[in-house]
Amino acid sequence: MAPQPVVGFWERHTSTIDWCEENYAVTTYIAEFWNTVSNCVLIIGPLVMLSQGLKHNMERRYIIAFSVISVIGIGSLLFHMTLRYSMQLMDEVPMLWGSAAFIYAGLTVKSDERSDHTVLQAVLYGMCFCISLVYILQPIPLILQISYAVLNLAVIILSTHMMLTMESVKRIFLLGLLSYMTGFLLWSIDYAYCSHLRYIRETQIARFSGMMFQLHAWWHIFTGTGAYLGLLFTVHTRYLYFQRNPQIKFVFGIWPYVYLPQRSLKTP
Image 1 (cartoon, rainbow, N blue to C red):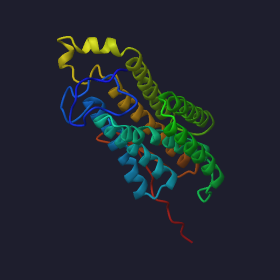
Image 2 (image 1 turned 135 degrees about the vertical axis):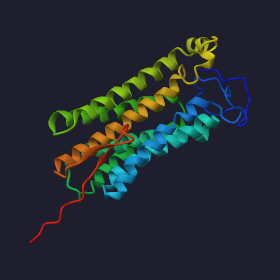
Image 3 (image 1 turned 180 degrees about the horizontal axis):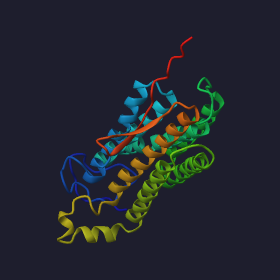
Image 4 (image 1 turned 45 degrees about the horizontal axis):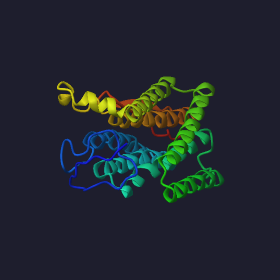
């Protein structure tokens, strides 16, 4: 996609990708306004489970995984705000590591709480390190996109196997999968039909539509929600497996999280 001629606060971009949203169309301080603000879902949403995880002493793998979602959101916000290459790496590289954290959580869903799985961690994160290094040395977007797609396919396969073979709340996984695939579809349309979307946004009606036709921004919202629900499903399924009586509760009746009751103390 061709770079935009408009120069704003961050000057001309150095990123290898310039997405479909018109640059500096809303404010001269943010290159892609809607692609930037839509990351609030990725940044704020996981903080709910992060606080619950710390409060109820959940396992470190889940604390890290939910934290990574927020880190991805922060990196994406900085990237779309500046369109700088350094910020692009802060967006894209954590996506690989986050997927590896999800795979790790899925592979260890039945494991003993005291198990470290050092070899598995070394394999997963060593793989991410190698992919990240190759991508930094050869900044070709297709390298990242294929790697990310393969890792996410592995996450979906693991979660599907979990849903079919373990006691679980299936609607959480299915809703998360639907949300994620909807986001991917919108990303694909935005990528393939950018000129058509820009033509629509130039019409009188669409000029006042805000984010409605900014499909990359909706990709952030739907995939961020899908990733959160997918990890929530893994957490809930694991604690069901260990009979910890996990409960699905909601913030303001909308945003779900796992509430984990304290272990009851056995009396002599």
